[in-house]
Image (tube, rainbow, N blue to C red; front, side, top):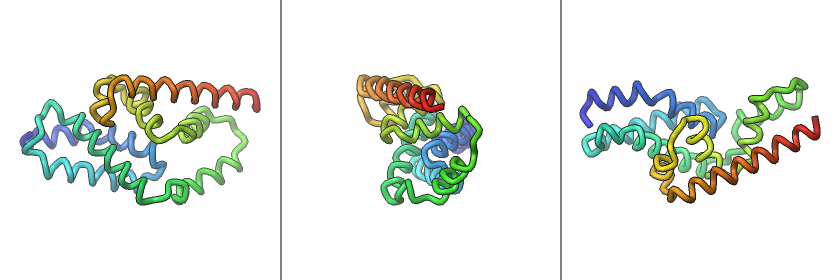
Length: 161
């Protein structure tokens, strides 16, 4: 991939990668850092990357950076996590987006990742498999289980409300 193709990839995929990372971290500053680290790592290897594989390579790199950061930091101890929890207690309005975020956060990390890639970013099963280094059948199973868990969570919320 040459410099022009790299710049095109940055312009084309930066927002998608940012949204993907922010959905996981719920911390905009941390997401900025991860996205920046992703593009830096891709730039270091831009000579070896095929331009038509840039999207997959970028998301794979972002995913691995995200996993590394999540291992280093305790997810539940982030400042944003505390702020959102306190605002949820104070707010009595039913907010669908907030409920969906809560439901997503109940999922195991791998299920959350594959659902976000499939349902939020629109990736195909084979692309998700390549990004997460899973088999295509594993991806399908994780997505199925995640959707079942989300459905169950939303039914519980409906019964309480």
